[in-house]
Length: 396
Image 1 (cartoon, rainbow, N blue to C red):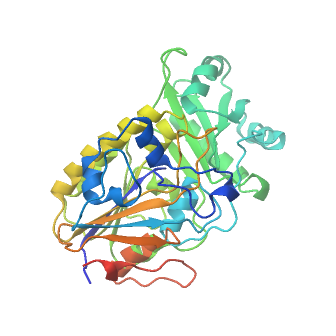
Image 2: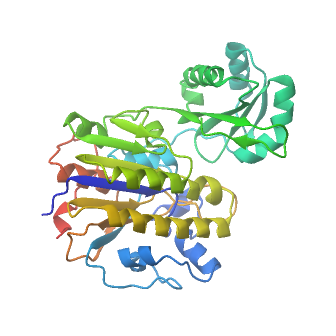
Image 3: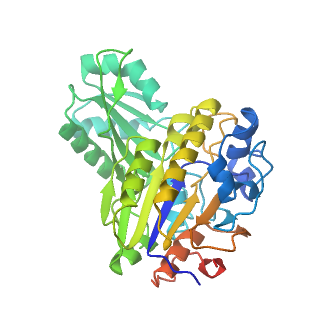
């Protein structure tokens, strides 16, 4: 059984590989994010993913099924009741979410909730609908600047987002407002997974731009996760991107914010040059936020091809005793109707320069296979309330 000093877990946010066993229960008819993008562009240029074994997952236009001795591949079905960011990430780390998070995609937030936000913060609310963040700022940003009314909106995820211009509502004030709203939405019928501060700048609708000072106020996981067991064992648990927000800081020893997939990969590659023992947990959100929800197939394809180059650079920096894991947290097929996530199986690639017998391992029935494998690698035991079994003994 191989043991690794460092594990780099990269979540290609929303890059699903085909409908899972419960897809139709979630209203999804044969989604396949990766394959449908590949077909739309007549073949993705993703030679690194091909070398890692992505050809095991389906018949693609250019990506072929090849021998990949340094990597193992598998498919994962989701166990939890949901197809959103928090559900998927929490399940990676052992949590089976049986009660789906509240969403208000179709209706907007109840009047009672909006009235309570106004009462406790002193700000009027505009928007209150499901929308693209950039589009609703373009639509309502000038009104917000004139009236100071907060732009509140949601999405397919369990989120309440609050956009405000940095020169109209200060960052500190916006964060204070979001903290108040987090407390308000702890009420069961309003309990969304995350409150998100969305500051922006600019002079008018033609040049508004969101800034990097986004901040998430998430629910804490419903139980102690694999991350906390790793941290308690004295290991480093490094967050890159929105991982720290998704877990509400629980189990994280240090955190790095990123402004894009490429920036997140630059941070991760830099961390690969540092000496630590433990886990580097990375979320790459552009796939989902910029392209999946907006049904931008060409943009999603370009994002995959950029990542393919970035992961090649990261791999060149890894040591013999490093393990790289690639996966996704759900699907978001940009060829599907609407703008919602899609319930899909997700890929798992486990790569190390020291592996010698790489192959396709089959299908596992929980995302928590990943967290359990990481804990097993570091000889960390976890509670019986967490799901998932290690596949570390498959790696040779």
